[in-house]
Image: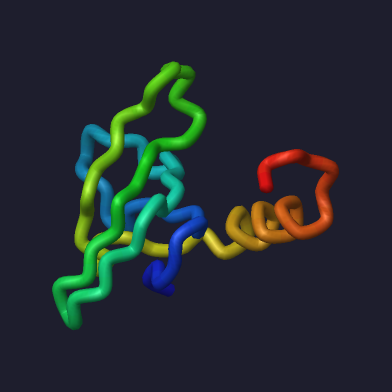
Length: 83
């Protein structure tokens, strides 16, 4: 499934040979533009204080549905003070 909203957890469906195939990203912004839709993503669990952001074509990404469901559940039912 391709990303279609902000807040989804995604990964590259075909990463380069030298990249971690399990690296996860969060969609910060979804930019709808027909067949050239893009997503602004930020890497998760990098250990960096300020991980970099990138704008990628949505067709290169796939949603990690399990991680996205867990995040949605946590934001709805978890004990946090994010919003």
